[in-house]
Image 1 (cartoon, rainbow, N blue to C red):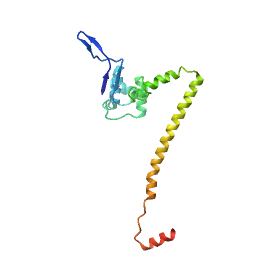
Image 2 (image 1 turned 90 degrees about the horizontal axis):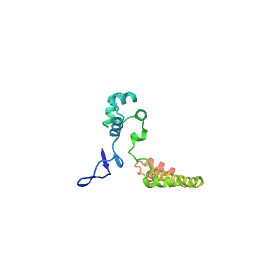
Image 3 (image 1 turned 135 degrees about the vertical axis):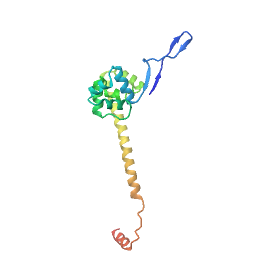
Image 4 (image 1 turned 60 degrees about the horizontal axis):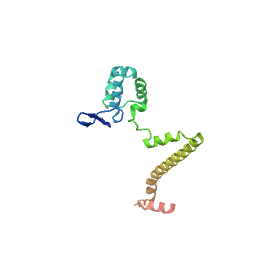
Length: 170
């Protein structure tokens, strides 16, 4: 688990760095995040297991990152902990847009509905264009080995019968 704190406080000797929960970047794995959320709700592993519908051993294994839960278990955990499945699985801000885009989206929300529709159409067009490029690149990559295989010279048959048959087929 990696935790970075961005905060400062003052002491008698001057500036000191102190932990703060107001500005922080959490980087942790699923098990650590699960344990943290469970403890914040003052739940025991047994209580969470009962709420999720699994054995307490599985909760211990999830928290120790020895195994990964199924989608159904994640769904039940999210309900039991009163959080979204995203908050269980993803890092904070991992799925959301960047800070710069958030500010731009906030500015777009202030536009007139007609202008918002134009912005939405432009975004949709760019997304479709990007997806088409990705699809074309994947299709090209899949076709390239087949073209190389087809273009490579065939081995010459040692058998005179096969050579004669091949010559008549051409």
